[in-house]
Length: 148
Image 1: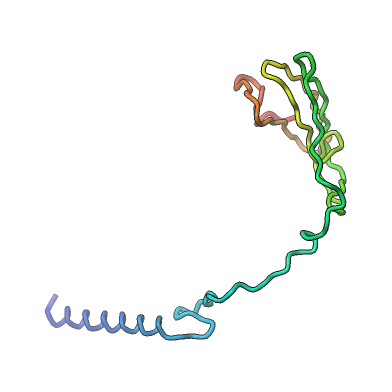
Image 2 (image 1 turned 30 degrees about the vertical axis):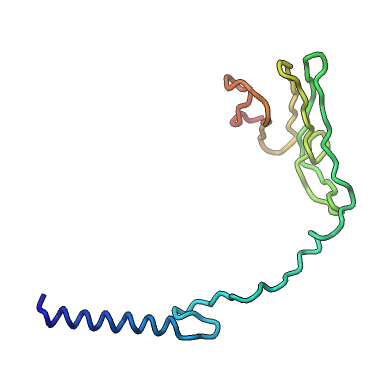
């Protein structure tokens, strides 16, 4: 490349950089130098929350039902179905467990056995999965891919 071509490129590049700097520093109302909306640096506008979020609940929050093991065995039946429930003064469709929106808490002691008859009244397959228990990874003890 000749010295003349190199100097021309340097001058053009410098001019473009200066132009970009000048355009970027020029105040624009509402738009950035690239035509994008400018972000406000002022205080945030106040937005009122939805009335549904601020409405007082018609019921106090309650703990779910508890099913407790007896003599080393927890034996229960859980029926899952889609039903209308009333929450915070509103009717909505939800998955229910033994007729309740919140599934029961199962209380066992280490070494206890658990027998659950799980009845699926849904129109599609579902699964029963537990948390907070040491469950054997062998077989279908806690197989999240098992469909009922």
